[in-house]
Length: 129
Image (cartoon, rainbow, N blue to C red; front, side, top):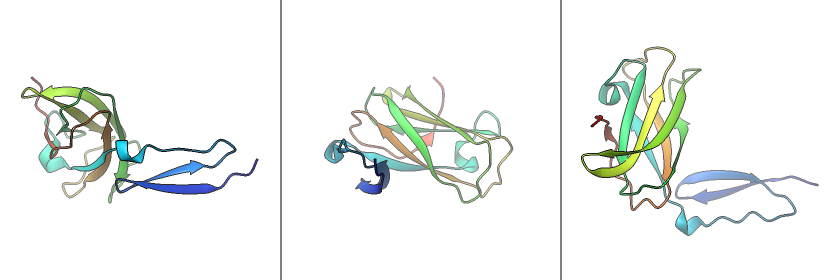
């Protein structure tokens, strides 16, 4: 079997796949991805190594988040996304756990997807209810 790299652009994000005998199909029209920026100044509430941001989506679907860019990368950074409600609005909670306190000018660009999202609002600090 011969493998080759193929890139598909979907909503500004690159998806790489190995081409095999079974063709890869993507429902690009149904996939909406956004990118959010998390930084220590706006998104640190609990302790300096934990940052959280809430992205309103009006959806209760499962989510997926990946690190897209980090100008000052830190080995050991862990990223989670989860379904949450803030001020009565459903959306995605993005949580970033760092092994050390980041520099104040550090930031992370995160690609966020949520199934059945009706749109993606601006990322705001998460306040547990």
